[in-house]
Image (tube, helix red, strand yellow):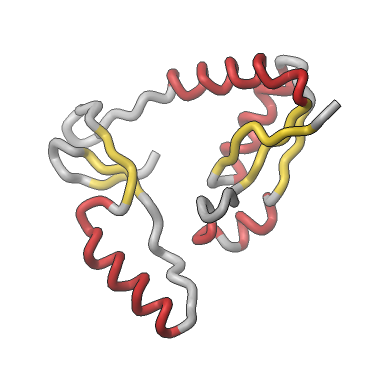
Length: 129
């Protein structure tokens, strides 16, 4: 019986909600990196960090099916124009964020508020889900 990582989340709330869904479907799981990801959220997404959900290898197919259903139900729609043409990244403030990253690297401090956001490719607005 091997234990494998199923997925990772950026927030503790999302991770606990999905953990509860898995447990309701009788899939045993546990969370890792919860404290670190909550204390240092600007490191989420770097080298596989984030709050990770681990499961038994034998439950992988069932868990992946549940995960895909959750992602389908949560289709991204722009709250400003209603478009489904959504991107995820540095968005329209890309140059400013890249300069902050470069300056932070030279200064030796983390660039805490630089995070990827959702943005509409039609109206160019940025937003979070």
